[in-house]
Image 1 (spheres, helix red, strand yellow):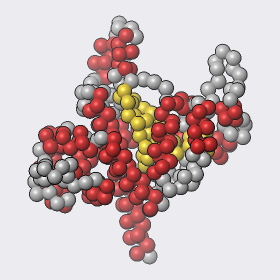
Image 2 (spheres, helix red, strand yellow):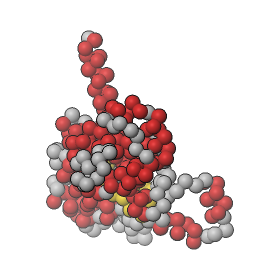
Image 3 (spheres, rainbow, N blue to C red):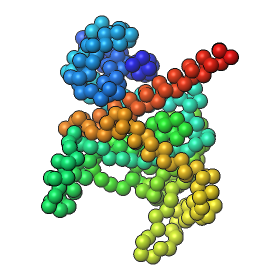
Length: 316
């Protein structure tokens, strides 16, 4: 809670308007939302949790706990794209100052994953889908929330995100994810790895020629012809010294791509895979809040690790 409060205090204004009641500041509400999300609570459950933990509220300067309506309104304000970008900028700056990104040793990894649009039993979905053919599956895919991530493989810290709804190809997400991550880090010469879903000649050109990065993406070969790609960068990915052998994949850093799968698994296991929103907008807001909560947890782990290292040095 303290980590989230201090991060938000550095980039967010205290209040949205000078005419507001000024009962709670935006950094305080952001810290409450992070604790609520980390504990997998609803808004009413978060209100009860904060009422029981009065010492937590006093630690960040709150005299009382916010009610569930205040938390809901704060989530809709703090989950906007402009606020999320500011918070991600602050988290990336903290990681860069403390040398926690590690992009010079391990690459930036990209991937997207789908989340459950609601809390529902898997057995119920299985029984409901029997005999329905592909019609129910198509409607479900159209309503499936998606989250695209670009993470620092060394620290599991999310540097950029994309939220959307429905299926679709991943190659269109490459440029916004990589550009947001590229502008947030001071070391702007690193490697970007992604799976074959991001395969596109334009993505290679954007990363290598416009940003000066090294892109490693396996090329999808046409299943009818089995011929190598004709474009320059996609054809280069099929060479033996790039992705043609296990040793070359390990040397270029592509074997670290699974770290982004680990981050997706961490979010779903620690924070839940089902979203509580009913509309597309609220579900995307919930995804952004999950990403911010995950980053706060990673930063908290880094702080505890540094404290333990300092204590061991003092004992010596």
